[in-house]
Amino acid sequence: MTVLTRQDRPRKGHSKPLAADVLAHGGTGGSVIVADRYRSVVFPNRVRDHRLKRGHPKLLAFAGSIPEIPYIRLSKIERGEVFPRAIELVRIAGTLDVEPEDLLIDVQSPQFDLETWFAPFADTAVLDDQREAETAVALAAAIRATRAGDPTLSPAVIDSDFGIAPVILSRLENAQKGLLRWGAPTIASLCRFFHVADETALRAHLDQMHACGALDQFLHEIGDPEDRRARTRQRIAALRQELAHAERISAPVAPASVRSALPSGQTVGASVRLATVYGVPLPDGAIAMQPTGATVELPSFAGPRAFGLRVGRAPLGSGLPGHATVIVDPDRYPQAGGIALVKSGEGHRLMAVSLDPRGAMTAHGLDPADSVALDTLAPADAVAVIAAYHV
Image (cartoon, rainbow, N blue to C red; front, side, top):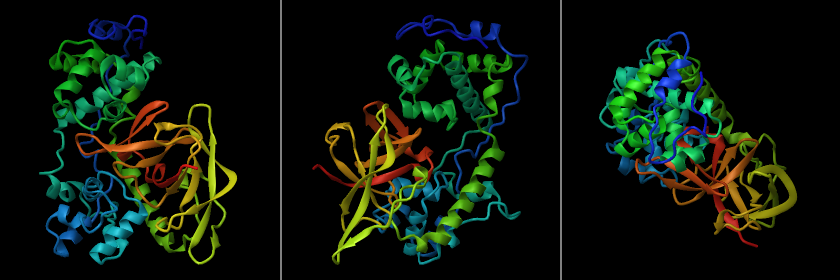
């Protein structure tokens, strides 16, 4: 497939048809679009059942008893939209006076039916109909195909040229919802990206790209129900294993994504704990999780796996200078208004956390400029920064 190069591509405010160029070099026919209507449900669980049994009819009121888990995230956990960390599941179970294992569901059981499980959430968690689910998958494949044909279309360029923020781009490329559930500004940006006049033309354009086979090599990457089921089984099995070993964790270690253990913390006196400081700057602004040979005193509220991290450069401006050392607690999930340590390629980045207009958590970095939808990441790939020393 051939698409327009960046040099041919019109800039902001201009329009140039793309369909003819794509269709002229398309494949031999469109593959069947496998659309998973339940693609947003990755963690069926019994949190809601036990919450109601324990006399908590409203999730918002119940969330007040677990302040360390933001309401938005707790809601996503209960609706199965994100996987909890083991420590979060332990905290929820403790508040409900049940065992963490009681909150898990055997999704491989013949008695489990996802549609039945989802029914109580139908009013608060909207599903696309089949046509919109297929459109979401086609749109995701079309964006991926266009970017594959023009490597200069980085998230930053798409943001500046077409007004699609990186966090929105990530959701579009992963078919999180159909066009009917995207707002007018996003649809207008997509029309500019594909150089079509309006939503009707955009839908026709996607149909044409699909019909000519231009999407075929990308469709298999998106929306396969069996892929979702396999990931769910794997993640729940991993969560069970984490819960089984939760009580054995005592030494401060880096997140799972770091893949290296810290030495046991040293105790000084009756209440002071020291932890190893990690952090070697990488050329792209990320941080390599390598020991520096230094130690740092942990605050009293730090968890048993907390560790230090040298910033190395100012990723968030003057508010977090390069000489600062932060305390990272891998047993805490980031919260809006705070800072997160986010896995990025071979290293990690320190990013500020906020909520987008829909309540999803987003991490932002300034150097380099970037945005990440935290709810799309594995739990070990986004952990909380709980303190900073500016010395």
